[in-house]
Length: 165
Image (cartoon, rainbow, N blue to C red; front, side):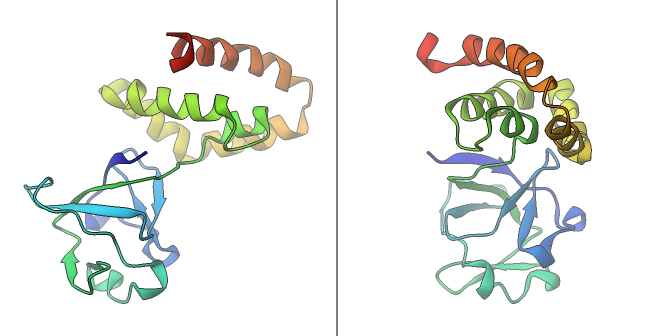
């Protein structure tokens, strides 16, 4: 399923060398042909898949290559759409699989609830600033914490799961 991802301005892009685009919520998506773009103030004007990461040869110059061979100034790139997955570190540590149904439901909670208001976006930015990854690493070293955290996450999953509505 394609999701809309708002891209941070070019000046904030700090992982282009790793072929990742920073989002406005300070998460990252990998540059791949699975991503398409909306340009400038007309995001619905046209969609063109991005070229694969290995073909991106002008990222440091501020241009991103499209699959059709043309380039778009990253200052015009506002939105990408695609089947993208951003890490859910704690949920993955608890459920053991980044593609587990529960993890997918929690991603939906983040995208459809948290990221729709300023406080939620701030929480998401804090989580992806490194706190989430560090917490997941700690959870991996304290097995007794997993059942306790799982209870709280299960409650969120149950509440926000499309299957329970």
